[in-house]
Image (cartoon, rainbow, N blue to C red; front, top):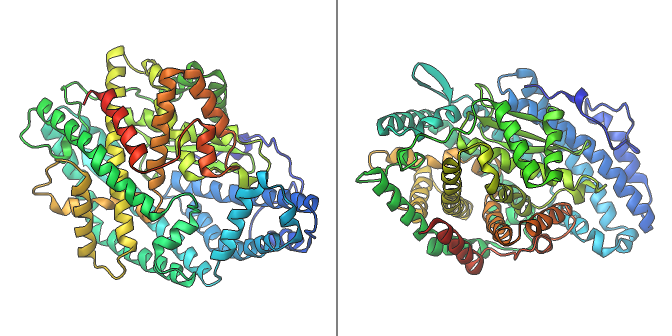
Length: 571
């Protein structure tokens, strides 16, 4: 599906960038950066006008990048889309970073920086100063190479297919067989999917080794002892530390893993099996057929629209913008990148949702989740500065995870009453699994980047040990090779290092909003919309407070979340 730009409205006219501007190469941008570099920054008024112009320019640039990325992921086999995206990565981004560095230095060192009102510009100035301190000219080509390597991961995994029942299926399409009541059907599908991943094991291991070396060089160039320390600064984690993440791991092991084990024992007994195997985790343990909330993508879109209109008319109207302007690409097909995401078209201030729907229960949840991100974009779109529209990732995920939970009362749009109860139970059970998986992935990344020079074998052994710490009672006997390389399926480890604990922090926040909604749905929705409308204009703890939530990721928040899940699931 091609992104049809001519359909999209332009509600925010350009002031600084020419209306007929088209980005073909860096030379098209040079005059704008030169103008910004030459403008005086002596007063608050000059600084605010300058920031508005820079914001407009960056919105144009980032929207072009998003368009090229969306097209490439929607059709990984299209050479022109791949060329256009790589051209941006290779020709625009390496020059954009030093140009932006020069402008950020100009602002933070200007007389006007101290004149900007603290209540509005604290987050922006803190971010600019951090980026100025981290920037190294020698890292620009290394980051370009890193981007190209991550695109290789997308291409490798996007090409993975298996044959089941005489049909070539993407791995996402094949996953529906893991929900089949027939255990042999599930086992066969799981073996085919796992076997297909193993075929690219060596290539993916080699690719990751290259990424690891690059990232270590980037961190060393910036003066950091290891990549973990660098990544925490780069991700602007000003409000928590690696020690806090380790406290999250320990709290999940103490409070959530026991809930997981009880659920797994319950599943094992219901299925009547001696040992729970990896292919037993997605089937309905009662023996009922898999939940199939829709057959066609059009039904998914119509049903989700109905849910949002029932939940909150304003959110319903915001969602209707997406299908109206072709801002959805939802169906799974060969040659499409795996996974799902929501990306921003920054100049138009509109969201785009990408996913791989095949009619499964998880597809419904994915669209609800990504729609939460879209609401964030739409509710904050009137903020004029791009720097303050974008929320920190930890709170961006509160927007999406909360939307899955807040819509629970309306899932009967897709299901009978009994099936809606099943779906809600599966969701809550899935949150238990997710919290343990987040701890697994995050702990693994902490190990990877604090053990320089490790071998592939040592890395595999570390993964297995961490997986056993958080994975419960699942039996992997006979499939040890699959377990050792299981982390390959988590694209964040390849594409976005250390981006995963955000989901844990956000899930704790989402459970908090859900608790509020059970007492007062209108209060919860009011908190939700008020906090999202702030975009990224306030520090992370203040965004949580705006939503009526406590910010934290240690013993207290995790134990309370575990208690809510225990009570709701009757464990």
